[in-house]
Structure formats: C-alpha cells, structure tokens
Length: 379
Image (cartoon, rainbow, N blue to C red):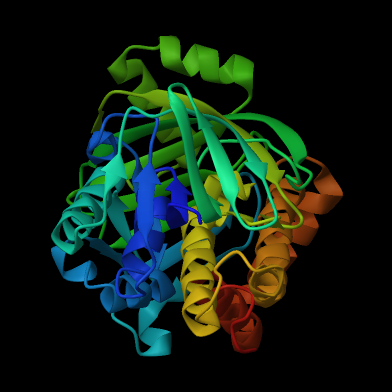
C-alpha cells in the first residue's frame, strides 16, 4: 500500500492552497519542494486576484490575513489610438473588481495555515521524475523515492510515464516588473494599456503601483540597463499622462510565453498551476485560473471519497475544468495577438471595439464577469 494518498510537488501558493483545501479530507498528504521550507515567503512578485479568488480564499480562512489593495476601477486603452473602456466595481455591487496582493504574503499566510493544520512540507527535495503503476505513483528523488496513490504537480515541468503533451508558444516578449511611486494617489484604479510592444499594466499596490512593462527581449535589455531616473522617464513616456510617477524601484524581468497541457491529467497524476498552464500576464488571469483549478480539484477529490487517483475521478476533474481552462487560455492568447502590433486596420478595429465595450453594458459585463469568475461566468 502507498505511503501517502496524495503527494503535492511544489510548495508555492498553488500547491499550498490545494493542501489547505483538503486539510479535513482525511487524506494522508505531504508537500515536497525543491526550495527550503518557507522560501515562497520571499517571493517578490505581486498577484492580481479576482473577486472570485477572494471568495475562495475567504472559504479557506486565508483572506483576513492578507494585506490586499482593492482595484475599484479598471481603465483599458490602447497607445496611439482612440477608444477606451472603464470597468467599475460599483456597476456590479462589489467592493472591488479585484485585489493586488504580495505573493510572499500570500505564501506566508498559507504556510502558517498548513503548519497549524499539521500538514508536512519536505523542503530542499528535488523531484527528478515519476513512474506510475496500477495502484500508485513513485516520485524519484535525489536520495530515494516517495510513493502515493495520487501526485499533484503544482510547479515545474516534471515528466514521466503518461505525462500529457505540452503545447508552447513563445511571444518574443519579456516583462520588466517594478514598483513605482505615483505623484498623485492611484485612487484604487488599475490601468491596462495596450501598445505595439505589448501590454503595460499599472496596478495599485498599497500607496504605490506595481508595474508590468512588456517589451521585446532587446528592448527589455535596454530598459534593464537604464538608471532608475532614466527608466522612470521612459515608463512615463510609454504610459502617458493619466498618472505621473515620482520614482521607480528595482526592476526584474522574465520571458513571456504560453505553455499548457491540453489534458491536465495522466495516470494517477494531475497537473496544476504553472505545471498545467503558464499564461501571458495580460488581464492577470494566471493565478486566478490556477486557484479555480485547485478548488475544483479539491471538491472532486472530496466528493469521490475513495481512491484519489482513480481514473474516473481524474476524468471528472478534467471534464469540469475543460471549458474554463480552454476559454481563459484562448482569451489571454487572443488579447496578446490582437493588441501587440501596430497594423493600422487592426488599430482602428481595436479602438471601435473599446468604444463598443464602453457603450454596450452587456458586452462590458461579459468581459468583467469573465475576469472575475472565469469562462464559466454567467452571461
């Protein structure tokens, strides 16, 4: 008999959320992570959480421990063209369209909750592969093996017997991320500005703004080489005059690509989070989609009440997530393809579309609800 019912590979926000959602299931669980225990607490990124993600984190008892900055309005526009649209939380009777949270603070809250629940995390443990059998899965480690009835891969690109195919598309873009201090208050407004080089996102984060500046790899090299004041001026010119930046902090960069598994399940294995799909950050859907995957996975396992790795159980999970996963992947990929160019006819069409979005409440509501709740949102 396998030593564990469930092994979760990756103790980042996705893996820890799955463990917490199953803490009262009676399953014998353990997380393994290549990093030392607690490393995710130092994650410098910020996450844009949808209203739907807030509801899930409230159910898990995590939300009240998070310092979150509400996004009350989302301003969508394109550089060098007419058309803009505003999405307002007040139009939906909500306190916010979404929230900005430090990834490290989310990880800390999840880590504390798992420690209180007595769910073990084995850090500094690299998984080199997996092998599936009829009744269990064996994880190969540097110094031995672990065996479980189900393995959830929540980080990395672990391969093994029965691993589903991986589809990749390189956007030839890099994200330069930083935190900027505005001259005037951001008024809890987020900006998504589409440019020929790629989208520029400005998100309220405390009293500052989190910046996601998309550029070609060569332009990203140049942006990283600028001193802080020169970069601030470049950012200001790129963004426009809707908000003014007094200063910009340290920058980091990472390449942008689409990577996903059409089927996120295999024999006694399920892929979640970045192990299942890595999305472009446009519209901030990555962690929100992962959280919906995790919540559904936990609910399916709780309903099954038997062998968590049973093929029928995993098939139910894949079926329940198919529409939302495919819809969100296509939605973000389509936005990148449609807006990251300077083709004149498309620019006019985009401007008309943004005008229509602002003038037609049903269309605007459809986009807003998809951003808040995913592709299964009501029309």
